[in-house]
Length: 339
Image 1 (cartoon, rainbow, N blue to C red):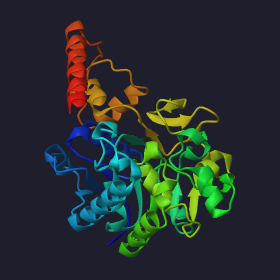
Image 2 (image 1 turned 30 degrees about the vertical axis):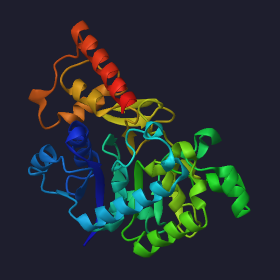
Image 3 (image 1 turned 90 degrees about the vertical axis):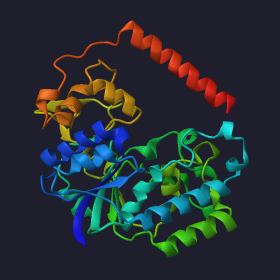
Image 4 (image 1 turned 180 degrees about the horizontal axis):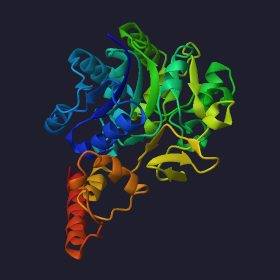
């Protein structure tokens, strides 16, 4: 058992993002902090090869815990009213493995921070781990200010059932791309209790139909209860804590390849490249000028240990490449429709 550590979720498909994240943690957090990669699936050849050269990085091997989370999440989704609809109505990643990030609660670190693999670490975690002495969950995101139409949970319905205000519920809404927490916060008994409430008390209806498959929706449901103490930096009384973190939405200033919030040069914990695909990053790393915000920062960390492999210049894709991609996309769309 180790007192503190970092988790991420990855497979070979996000290899470039994983390497960039690991390098950014080494430079901006600590070169020695233990890091554990939770396997998204069994496609891990590149991942295993990469961590052989990193003394502080391991692969999560508690397969019993992974299976327990797989079973829990799939049982919940199968019980949702949307599960009875045609497969054509289901998102492509239905019954995927994004939820395996929650296996961090069964890992070896007593206190931990989880980063999504499509992130770059920009700041040490000293204050996060200090906050975990007082709180069970620590976040750093702006989910709580989202319009009601795009929140994971049906806040209006929940407020009516719980006899509380929507504002109170909003204060507990969060993302799951950056999470600080404690080992064993959610054990077998807690998961069984959640299932009982979801199935027998119909609390599964608290999760909106259009987000019924999302790991963040289920995680928000699980942490909605006041019994879990929570701190979100974006709701901190200290204005220095309230920063952006999203690559395609927030403005940052680069100082020696570390990003700061444009407003007041406040240090940020991480840059999250949400909404960009792993294919985009693979093409970027091969020298294509892909439309990714803060692409130069990503390339810096991706090739920090392999500068000789870093593209000397970025070039737009040729006509032939664009044409191939167009037809491939059209063929895949047709296949999904036929299926």
